Length: 474
Image (cartoon, rainbow, N blue to C red; front, side, top):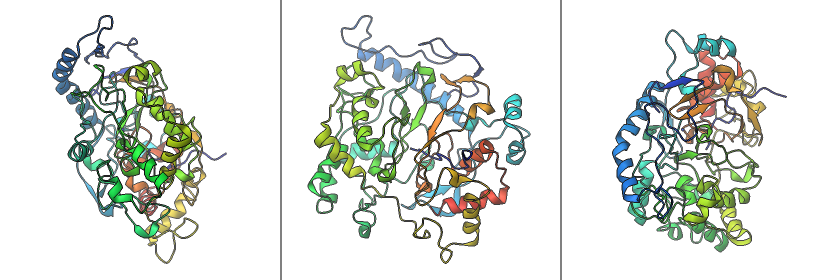
């Protein structure tokens, strides 16, 4: 069996409190970490000990600046958050790719000196960059779906639906997120190129954009993917985090234009709260070749995933909350199947330098890109988990990241390792920042450094640059 490789599950596909690190210190269940707000009291009308919604909203709005400031301090401590573009490298839609690893090294270390140490030495000396630790939710004790401002603003403009939470804003700077709006490519009509025409697809424009391109069943599937349904934070009850009663969230609010916009939340299948992982929205591009879905990859088809999202993931895996807030039960034979059929039309972006086998065409690729490909399939052993042509093995791997750090609780998130993680496809990888399942790796360069350390392949700085050049061709 091959070792997990340099770019294994480099997505995610589908992202605090400054230096508040308590080694091996877990708060009691339901308690907040030292110096952080307590978990809010739900405002359930008529429930025992309930706090009225207006009071919950006023309290959380008052606490929001301090909550956001603490998380901003954590991000600034972990990362260089400046807008530093990679010269001449853009995403498919034209947005600049961010340059350089952004995780901050511990004092006295370099990337080469860190990679020269054994996992035990890194752990014993506490030298793992904090940006390589799991990334907490912007308010981990509270959790819930968070959407980037660009998406919130466009949905509000087009449809009048407001996805802004009154208690919390999005945390990752816009320049570390994918193109917006995201291009859309269809397996059925590659001749059309980007069928979004630079627009965010919503209920307001989907028919205009797709009528005559999709058949009636696919068009209905797209309509359902764009239809908002009640969700844990966005619903019509008092137990919500939107200022007004909300229609809810649509599948393509997170998977915007069938890709990803960096929206994040906490996985619904882990308890207690402090052990729940932050999860970045993975891209739906290339769903047609994937075989594992869901935060723990327990779902084996996109139909399973579509149905599960509505029944469970929208409500943090809580069927009681789902029943109370308005769960949408989809019909498997018609609605789910139509939604899945549209999702399976979503193609990867064009990669003009790749040949029929998914590898570089020597007549089109540069010397650095060809050297990077040789590393990918050779010394770096990336292809052990990311074989061509789609660069995934449709499996899961445990990187055993706990070898590099002692368990700790930061900003309400207890970190004990990542466990088994899905191997995401690397086709179109430059379009999908930030990376790893929780978005802790802000750039592709961070991803290369992370896997260089975790897998122990010991690439030189020149080799890392060559590998990055190849990844940007995929």
